[in-house]
Length: 261
Length: 261
Image (tube, rainbow over all chains, first blue to last red; front, side, top):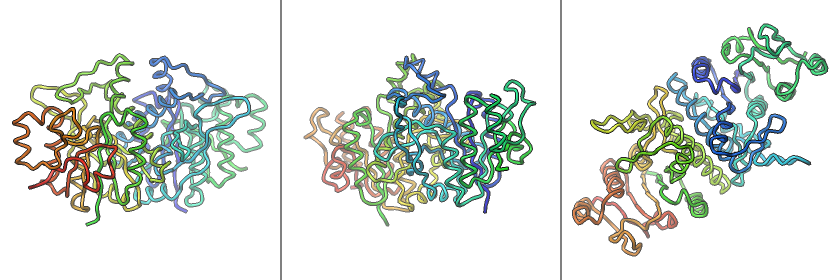
């Protein structure tokens, strides 16, 4: 099968113009089919503060009231998404920026939770693979903002890592999918403050151990849970690593590889 | 040739949730190929005020400094565009929301003016008709936000009426294009306060007269200049009229038609 790179960019890279620009230049240079999924960085939080909209986070997820939904739709699907597209176009990469409502690419439902009301947060039900496949076949690079919809007119804020995973899984029926989570760290680290302690490979067994030893905790847990779920659903490989080493991540010379055995 | 409806929605309709919703339901019901171009309403102005970003208007054009560009990109390409798309999807209209940077659909340059610095305002150089044609052929309805780019990474704020005109003209080589400017008034009026005084048809000759008599003035002049330019460049017909009468505008039972003779 033809390779497809599904690459998530997030964290501090989005907020740093120089780093983002150099990442996008590297991304534009990747040969073959590719989809970029971006997070929101701190811009939405900053804009919410400027507008006096209080933000509540539960387990790393933003509680999304109606004002916050408006803010993240503006920042993610507007400012960040379109600036990334303009950057890629300037690098001769024919990009199209979309959210999950566009072409009904990502249909979701409002999260139901026994005790917590997350507000307008969406959990993905369905990836519209034919639309993505058709765009890729036309040599178009898709840039996805982490906003989905419920097919009833409601936009929903959706975790970008999850979107990358859902797209990677769904596209595995059609391509050999390489799912790459790129951020500001060199990978999964033994010592969170030391980039030289990157763990080159994690299996399901070593993951359980690392969690027990509290080496992997907090925000890294959903990332790795997603990674293993993706592998189990057909994704060829998952890599977590430094955005500025994108080329090496693709060539398996950097980062942490999440593998079956 | 197959008909293509290029429909501009603007003015107060965008700001009125109920009116916008009923317009979009009617729009979704139009059979055949269609492109929607939306303006920005008062949301960008309101957000700028909330953020303390001063707005300067020259001849109805927003002077776009770097903060204002950020605001219009968020509001136009983010909030408004994605809410319209979600609405249309809920009405079984397979919409994709784009700005001019996406797929390099609208390439522009920063406006050069002898005495006025409009800032990050773009004048359109090129419409990428193959991308639009390919989406339309897949039964996709394109929703365009009034943001373009210069292929060098710079987004530019661009007048939505002009975008509708440029797209209509460029697509005239491929379709029988009906360009419809829909807003809150019933058409071009003899008395601006009285919707019953709509002028059913305007020719180049009557236009000159109406301007001389000061019946047509201010914001209506660029609209009509665009309309005549579009006719002269191959557009089949141009209609200006009430958004809530969209079906009648399409059937030529309402609004002002701009015609050759």
